[in-house]
Image (cartoon, rainbow, N blue to C red):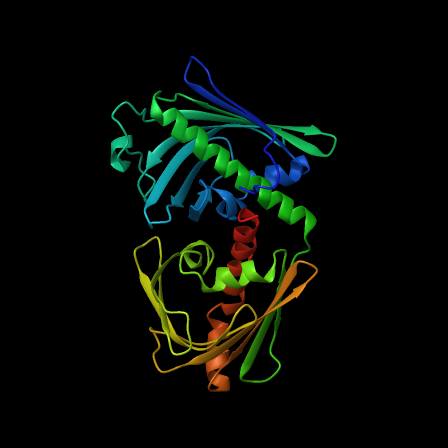
Length: 331
């Protein structure tokens, strides 16, 4: 994922159709173990580059099952399921791996456009070894069908492990609660965060329609940019699509654009029309990093309170976490 640091890995496919990947991760074993076994953490890194993981559920015990979903940038969902066969805490996990539908029922590879030679069940073995404060992770994916599917699996796993490495590195090196969230008046909300990227790059992430779907909104939704005319008087419209197919639309008008310093736009959720918010985003650069401040001004105190009840703070934090990840990928 990050292009500034080479991977420390070995990848091979054996004659017995077993994909083996070894990765040295600069994080303690208990942190890597938790990232692999906690469904909420899995959602932060599961799937290839630019895929999201809108759902992850598991009964983490021998005989328990899991059901994960990864979503492509185009909004297509791929579900997988399996059974945990062996668990040795902080050392080893063995589980089966099968394609599934959203109900967790095993389906053949043809369900997702794969070849008929794809097995209904494969086996994944993951081992975790502590090495001087780092973790040597070895993944074995047995039962591969051969051919181009092996290359696809190798690329997908390596990109997922890139995201896992970034996730645990981020949790290890950065304090929690990086975004500050304040209510200076009964009609305002102010959010601030410092991103480890130059101002021009952060500003572009806010104003490039190709970048918005890669970070805007909570991970469980896919964002579609229907319109984005970034100029004073121009309009924008985003659609957030959930794993159940439900869609939520938002739109607004750009009032002020001062590259790369300031963006002022209106914001309106189409599910409750008539409640318009004015968002003012400023971008300040300090030593190669960028402080983003967003002030949301509501028409009434009641509007602000209702927005906060919908989980605005949690959603904003998750969006900015995704933005931080996206900016790392762009290095």
